[in-house]
Image (tube, rainbow, N blue to C red):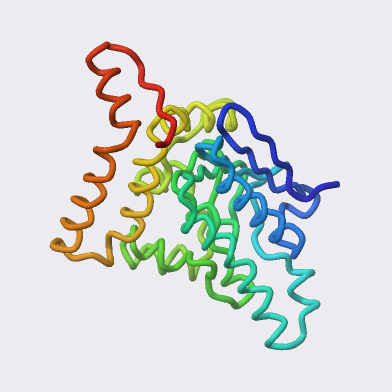
Length: 257
């Protein structure tokens, strides 16, 4: 059985973590296959967006304790940690938008992976929990940074140190979940992603990278980068298409050039 399922349809790459019997815990094989699937989607020019999900009752339980417990020296533990970290680093670096479709629970590093996505669509019953303190660890794969950047620090400390489950509605209130699905998670994630599928790919790539790095820029540098990007986009075929469609009162067909 493949531990990661991939389907490409209508400009969307559906990547599904497929270890339901292990709650989609991050074995070496699962980690490697997720990274490979993300890179493949990024390199496929037909793909506009990735929907990342988990098979079974939950998105992911995070680190695979069986794998971790088999590692008995610092070098092997560090190798596993760095490889798992590559999932969130790949999501952040790739130009293609990633939607995390979260069902059931996103625990530990599963929470980290969901937070690394550009957008989150979650079931109304979904819970997110930083379960690391239950086994005397700290959050990893970027979770502490993303939470601290978006949520008041007293709450972050409570969520982490108390391993407090947080609901999809709570995270939506903090702007970390984009849409709470009431019926079909994947269908509603698909519906949510349509603005990306139909949108201008080249402009969207610039938006993702600019927003992801905006905290590193001062206003002068930001202004210069925006102007340079806009100068490039104003010469694109998609810009011409968008203008023509506007005047013809038609829907534009963006191709990414």
